[in-house]
Length: 302
Ligand code: CP
Ligand code: NVA
Image 1 (cartoon, rainbow, N blue to C red):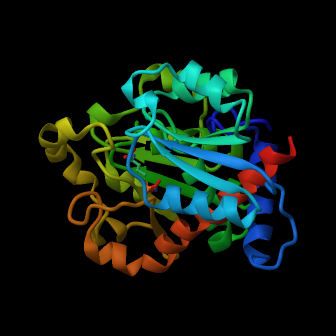
Image 2: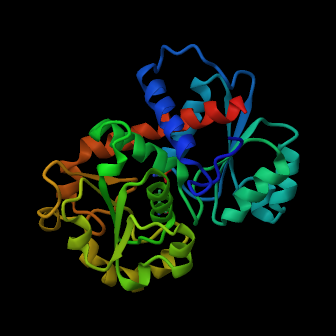
């Protein structure tokens, strides 16, 4: 694997190997001798805000022997209109890898192609692959490694956003049942579903149907970064998909609620549900570090 640009492009075997490595790196944190990034500089090129992704990558790169360099697009020429392909060709001659958070998926694809260095998608409007790997790691910790076939996972709210799309590709590769519930306006586009061609993905406008007997219930903000102007028009249609105590009464007895964070209490999730699931949700956040160290090790070996 040279780059991590999307879950769509990963194979099931690559995902399984990545998760196994993430578990090992977590267990060995502070004791593992591997320094695959020794002597390397990795840039974090971010056009959007971040707490978890930035801190976990900066920490992970340092723990693997490398030097992280944070570049906000507010400060570099990219933000003033220098083309991504020129930025990529300059950085590709100086640094050893790049972690990019931006809007267009094509920008991470172009950066990888023009720079020639390992490139990681740290969130685009299309996908959030690093988050999904950490989420899958958290689910394996909770329900056992490799138990995908027997699991029903749901994702509620803005199901055709970057998280929803990454969940769909994960369901395609690993074979778990994925129930997506949201208002009509948020349903995945027919061409997305056709490209997936995946019978284990269920789309419904009925939140209860998605959550019934479900072991893992996921949600995310209704207003992703860059969509702030849609706040007023979107929210009303999304309230039936709020993850709250009443809705969870139909979930599996041993269910967990997950959230990639940041959470907007009183909107996609209630304070009560978030706090009741805090041990899992904040372990999910911690696992960003371990899962991304697995990604960095894998790409550095290429
Ligand atoms: N979940 C996530 O990517 O968080 P940040 O936006 O804080 O990086
Ligand atoms: N869908 C959200 C995820 C944040 C981590 C967004 O893109 O803002």
